[in-house]
Image (cartoon, rainbow, N blue to C red; front, side):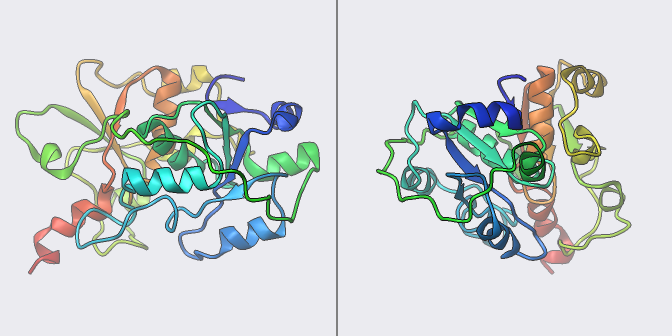
Length: 272
């Protein structure tokens, strides 16, 4: 495939080399479901990491629903499951990379780039290989991963509001949330002024497979190459799918980690 994705067939061929496989299945509305699905069956050798318990920092008044974890905590989590600098990581979920892409971005942000995402996710793996395990993998020897934050660009709310910065904002949420017609999670509906809506699920086909490179290149052609691109969603999770798409298209872009859940926490109606 390419250096960002791996097919089910390719993964099956390299299982014996013992890449670090991570299951990131999760559901924002049923937060134990992902781990329950993991226990019910997962790719042989896969470890489970929870988006909120393992891959986010503590929640405050501001900063959004899924703040970035600190370097020390993230490194400890990854060493615990055996990550070292030279080890390849394969990540999957079952929701068009919604959560797997978050870990891909985090690993890259903290300095580990030997990472690929399983195209089509767990369902595609089961359909193609039939290999499923229900046992927890053996606790490995601790890895030697050292987190070096800042290897990917981020922007915070102060910078988004700065008058001297010319930014192109991409809102990754579904159109109804962008338009303010509904808001199932955050206390305020709407979007950041000036943002353009590019729903993250557009990047995959109906089978959950990521679209070809040519599609991603064409999809982002409207962007001005002279202006920085900043991507957000509700809480800095599904925005990472659009960042993956932009990476595939050869476009550099920043993440606004707090996203809409941070932005709306600063609005006057939330602070009155």
